[in-house]
Structure formats: C-alpha cells, structure tokens
Image 1 (cartoon, rainbow, N blue to C red):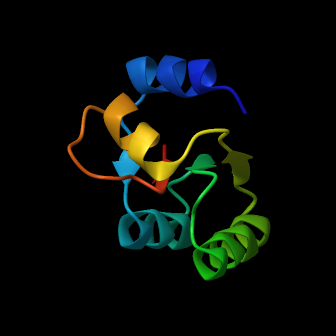
Image 2 (image 1 turned 120 degrees about the vertical axis):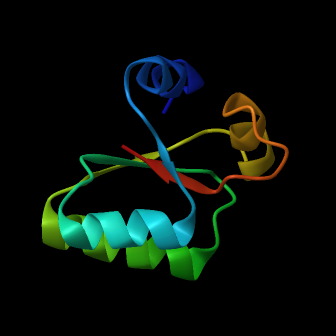
Length: 84
C-alpha cells in the first residue's frame, strides 16, 4: 500500500500506535483499519491478521519498514503497527 494513503489518513484520523494498543482496540471493536510495516515480526503479523478477520478489520501492508513509518508519524522510534 502506498505511503500517501497513510499520510492522508493521519491528517484526518487520530492514529493508535503500538502492538498492545492496536490489539486491545481491535478486541474492543474500535478499529476500522490496521497498517503494518513491511518488516513487522511474523508472529505479530499473524496475530493481527487473525483478530482482524475475526472482528472485520481491514489490514493494509505498507511498502516501507518500521523506521520509515516512525518518521512519517514524526516519532523518534520505529512503528511497526498503527491503526485508526
């Protein structure tokens, strides 16, 4: 998926960052779309895909790594998973 879509969504929506926060919000039914960096851990990716199917959440795989996603989000750390 393109980085442009991620940037557009970030302008419109408040993003939730991090594995624990995203998984918790998926289980609560408060997430509509999840973005995953291309170098996200395999077990985390599988867990996110499982819960996303169960709760009807769209998963978008980004074409950039976690460090680049972090800088797009204006964070000084890598961000492998984010959602809204």
